[in-house]
Image (spheres, rainbow, N blue to C red):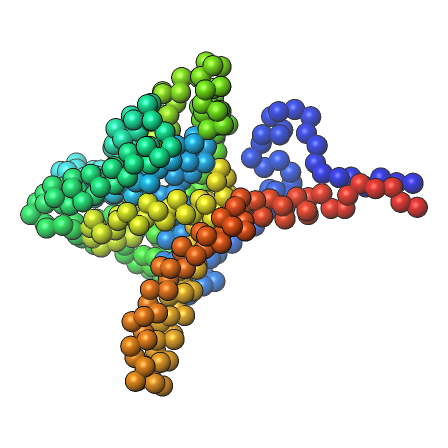
Length: 384
């Protein structure tokens, strides 16, 4: 008679809370790192832009996940804080007379990213102040006010007019540098050409890894436990001695900081920065990402972002391919091409409805079930 092991057991809290708790998980992480590094060599160049768009959405939705998923504070104006980060970084790089040694060392853009995070965090706290008195529907209206005040009014009417540039800030080539590396320029190393898209992709991977690591460690801290307590029951949390006002404002600042980093990163992917990149749709989009990926799950950020971007890309390719086919084969039906162009946007709404009805816990829950199935197989049993 023999017993087969079932699951993995830990003898103390430190073992249970480690990032990589088993050798199998370490192997998966090493494999993932190798695949991420080799990804540019395995795909066509157009998929690099898809990859760093996914990473941008992860960074932008990270603050939404913190507020909604871990602190229970609903937000529908997160694009405003991303816009603050983008414009702060762009203006610092373009208008500040940096010392020449900082420019030569490629430190002006990284410094502007950090400053953009703080600026967006403080701006987020300003609109998070009402969370001390209101919640639910009223907090939703407050965060929506952040969107309408920030982008159409402050940025479009005032910030965008600085320097007489109209509504857009153009980013000259060679402006965005991280150390000695120009993100928007190609580099030839022997016979290997490293394009601008490849540099932006690798930069986005490093940035996402650092932000997810910071987020994960914050959630393991006293601050993270306080946020979760407020989410579960704010009255009980206050009774236990949690200063709910202070921790709510800390949550808004941290979410705004991540949004500022996302906005500053997005500057590296563009040749200009314009208010149209931060419309209210994106605030809804990033909330939809955490609904699809899973509320209160860091993995859900990755799954939701990848799902949304890839679905949009596949639909775009399908719509363009069908339009070309119709125009070439049946020119008289060309009017159909203007009708189906809106399918891509409607698919996002249909996806949210589908997940709320049939998979309310998101893709991360399905991944958790699949992972447990393999981790616990075969179950312990006694056999003859």
